[in-house]
Length: 154
Image (cartoon, rainbow, N blue to C red):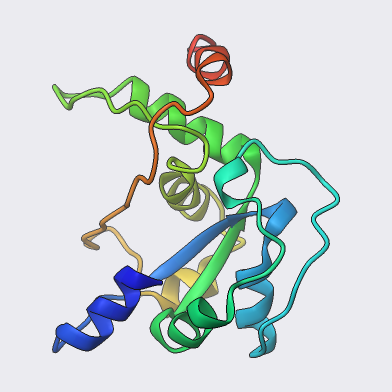
């Protein structure tokens, strides 16, 4: 929320911003969908422990409800696919060690690009072959044993 708040305040032409959450804890996704801050029961587990929240804070909601164009919830599988992608770069790119929560942004992008299910959302955010995209990684391998399990499947 702090980054979105800064962008909204300081940038004359802010970029399109979206958030990413796990399916098991998609409180921001549901809040944006309904237009009101809601809590979700996260009875499922997710490997994205850093994003495993049932409620958006009031302070964050007051910023995000007007600063985001939308939100996506993703599966743990997409997050893990992103971890593998970051750990096995192409064309001389550096290796990026990312945990499950940190890789969620790239996981969402992979999901958006792989399926036609989100075509309306892609149009809404103007995602196409000419888009410039910034994905923010928020963590390294905070769960080293799981990181090794995921990336060793490469």
